[in-house]
Length: 436
Ligand SMILES: [Mn+2]
Image (cartoon, rainbow, N blue to C red; front, side, top):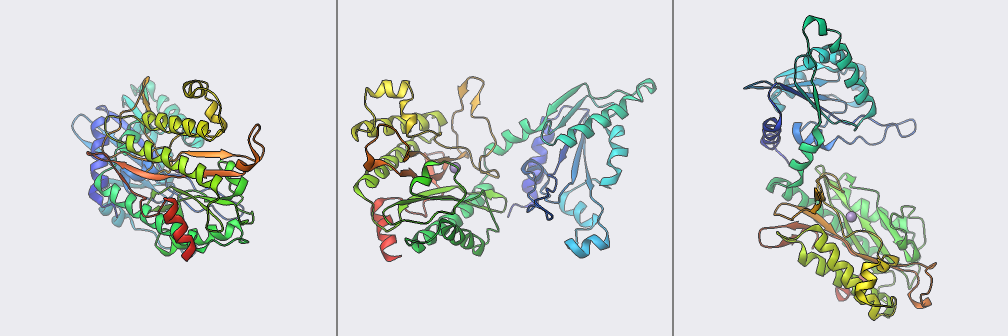
């Protein structure tokens, strides 16, 4: 569990980057309606990273003077009636003590207090463009403050997107964060293993999903990091297939892309395996090629290289392999240059992972791909997809879709695979499935 020192340190880092005589405002995510009940509430990660607070709708204000900072929190006022429905919430004193807040106000005081707080500040930092109605409120506060211009009041003359600052802070993970990411990965790995063992021809894809989700929850991960993808046979060629309604046919592969969220941190794992426990020669050939590409890409995930180096080696491995198998024809360099390989590998090698499954942090700094450094966590997930609709492809290859995905921590030496708990070698997979 992240402790209050973690958040205090993050605030300190944020304060250092704010200009003197400025104001910064952070807002937690709103509650969204699903039908007549709400979607499960999920806090805003930037807000959480700085405050440690997960309460819906809270707003944090940071005032930076020449030599001091002040931390204000605007908190929704709950009443007894509401608490009967939604549970007791923390008292003012509990919140102030736990989160080192200097001053607490009720949310309904916000519109009245903000124009004054904005007055005579030079810079305003806030998550510009994140929540449309919040942007509108900022405009209204600015307008209110401007009404006092003839009293000598000025409003901030520069507005910065605070997300740019916080996202770069979140990009490099601390040891505390890595330990939670590792737990998240362990839970998802164990759930993948159990799902694999339970697989039988004739089941529905959603039955495998229920085993995965059940296993994660049982291990303490109450929410998934994203909607699980369980795609059998040709369904695997649809990258974000989420119906999970198909029947598992013997002789097909099933691709499961699923991960959990544990203490706000995501895991993201993909495994592909034969529904009846044995790979056909064609499935094996494609699987081995994807695995070779994945291992090659992982070996490039180390300090000094870039994300693009991982992508480039995967593209080359896959293109060479597809030529060897007769699925692509031509010179390797031309097939890469002309992106012909995209007929079968049409996504990127992976993404940063952290509090968001597709985590924050720039991939390029100006024109250049970002250089990897210790503390970066990323997924490596090449795939090959040969759809039933593919043209100029021998029938025997059709309906094969394979992706293999792990979460990789870049370390001083090279890297650590956080999701190593779930096997990916063909012999290991076949032996797990035979015991099933
Ligand atoms: Mn992924």
